[in-house]
Image 1 (cartoon, rainbow, N blue to C red):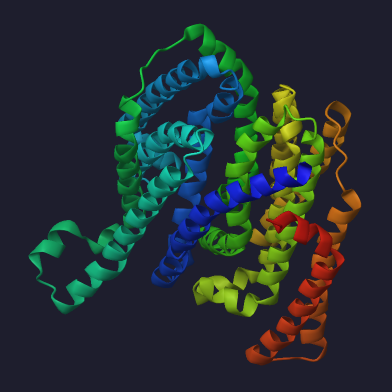
Image 2 (cartoon, rainbow, N blue to C red):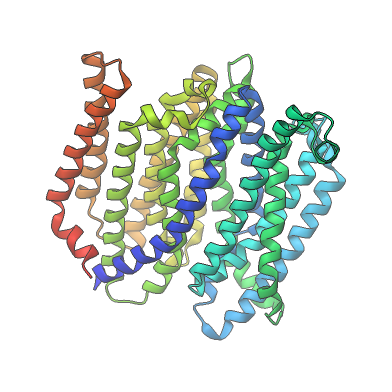
Length: 497
């Protein structure tokens, strides 16, 4: 039955979600650490910009091979050959990338306007190369349903990163303050490196992850099948274009703010935008966990008769959860704002815009299954390219006038138009009877609840944070109660043992 399929996906989402919730929460705790330590928003802007470039190049260096792996391993006889061919391919391209970036590090640093820090380029080239390679190892763990192994490696990566951040950014400065002549600390720590320690910590964590995965890699008999690789690359290439355009939509706003902002210190605008973007943590965590579980689930489910009914049920449940997350974050924004340092809170008005934008992105991920299942991945590329055009056009129009707020609205417009385009095309080539009325109701109700909260606190001029929290708690209880009683049959059936 379709409901049992939703339960199956829900259980997988919980497994991966637990890893992501715990991992991301721990990792995101670095945001307040960074934004409180680096009170100058321009410093944190460097972090936001470089990680935007990282996201772009990881997409380039994986070139759609994760999805190709899930597609071509549907033939069990080819599973090992597919895996080994992809590993060999990613290994070669990652090594070439690291070598080229290291050789031309100074030139690249100058192009990025960081001429004094060519080491950033080298560090990030290694991070990108290693992460691109390990992406296929994680994909295989997901395919094999080795969720606990997946979780162990992911969490180790996160803990190493966090521990090193705490060591370099808190412990070392504290020890030097107490004992300026500490020879050990002076040997391994230099205050001048500053935000560079964020990158060093990430680099070490990525290498540790690779070392943890190596034993399982060497158990595999490696064969490179050139003909098979050409077929996979042919399937994956549109996904590469899709991924590139998609990452432009997701991260290039940070780069564009640097060059288009009317702020006299545009790097500070990048920092504020990057920090407040991460306040949408819970929405991002849920969507990421859902993506990990959903892609293999959708492919496995495709052969079943009730597949389309399951896809519809999954969409409805997804929007339901995301709407609740939106309301929860916005009603308690008075508390959530302390996630970032005081310097960055001027950017809080972009939070509801970005939360809703990410909800639309999550819906788009749900809808995207139609072109992956039908093999018409070119449409995914077309939609993403369309989104990238929207991103560039509106960023160039809005950022010069509204600074990072213009970037937030551009993200909203981009994801909304991509969602609509994917839905219209999907209904033509792979029709699924999505419950549009119910999903639209969930979204509209969430926005309305936030609007009611905003109006009440402003009409009655409620200044005290404690009173605002009390009022919003009452509103939240009423909202959740209404959702439960109007959906109690579906909720009870979904979680019925």
